[in-house]
Length: 306
Ligand code: 3PG
Image (cartoon, rainbow, N blue to C red; front, top):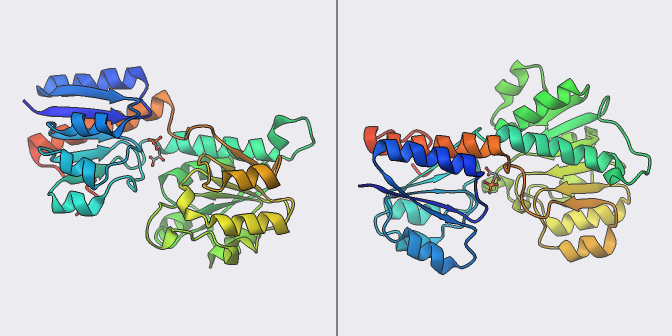
């Protein structure tokens, strides 16, 4: 009998766990649930005899992967898989998948929410601004950015985008693609970041880019903290006293923000972008189906470590 582990420090909504378990029951697999674990040892023990795992931002490093002696597939229920050591997984012959797009609407709604929260001076009563008529710059044009675009357009915003890989998709829906990242940051009132924490995107939001920001612009980051050069962001916010940073990721240099930028930043206490029942259901059920299809039909669609 196949054994499946659901390992989530940040648990899925109970309704999602229930439905995921049903899919595995139907396939004749057993399910082990490890939620809210605080000690890595718990994960090392739980992974030791399972065939597959569904995870979220749970860190699957070399030690965890090597502890999974029977592990054949890991599905990251979500988009970013920077938490999985792909090199070790590939060496060990473990298939790693994600569930692209499944939690995108939830993250997009949070991005818009953060933009409004910043624009409305964090609901403090101080006069704020409106989304309508402002220019939203999408840094990246994947599933989340496309949902942000849909919502922003309905709010009467002008939307522009910088993307290297999805130019045709953006142009097809009439979106203006800027020639450079600098141009995007220069022309936007609100920037929403939607690039993964890998390759050329790491620290891609550097001073060279940030120095082009307009007075009073807001940066919204629901992607990863690693895509921002934090010391450059601080330098830019020091030089321009009206720029704000609203994020679903707490930066490493939190104390600098606390000391220097009162009222100009907000960080969710816990990463909340994909934390809706709907996103948990979409991503969790997709992950479960992907595992069953992999074992039963050899289907490796969505494998990210080919
Ligand atoms: C993702 O990469 O899918 C999002 O960052 C959501 O991450 P989470 O599942 O840890 O909330």
